[in-house]
Image 1: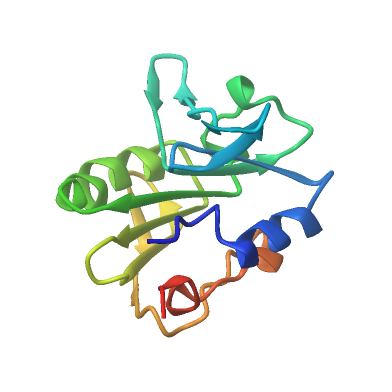
Image 2 (image 1 turned 180 degrees about the vertical axis):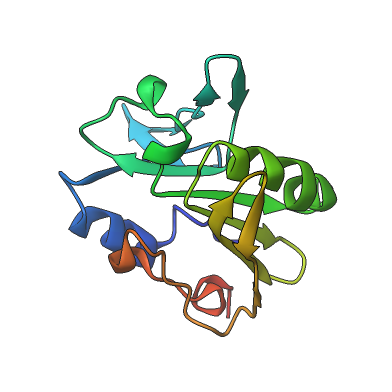
Amino acid sequence: MTTLLAHPQLKQQLSSEKGKVRARTRLPVYLTRLGRPVRGPEPQFNLGPDTFLVPDLLVHPRAIATPDVRGTDALIVVEVAQTSLAYDLKTKARLHAAHGVPEYWVINASTLMTTVHTQPSGNAYASAPEIGPDTLLVPTSVPSLAISLDALAPK
């Protein structure tokens, strides 16, 4: 299976944003160091002074160091879930909304359906449609990172 950030299409899109955004992931992204594969850093996302999560993908402005990113600073937060799907869709969605994360995606690893949460209000999102894998997903704050999950699936 091709991992989300290791896929050439997404790598190219992230490269086009170089200098503007920073992506941190805990997905199995492999970097090359001395000819050996190594895992990329895991992003601790400090929503507030006493609340933190470790999302699968956190994209934020490059001008803000990852440890200093707070909820409203994030451009997009993504979780890829299978066994934690209900937790990510309910508990984590409420936490992200309460801390003003503008866009939060939850990708169902089994079906590739994506719930796109936008418009945080209180501890909920005003909009949370479920999008099929054949539809182009376009992050509101970083449209150049648009991706169709069908394009990532092995043929």
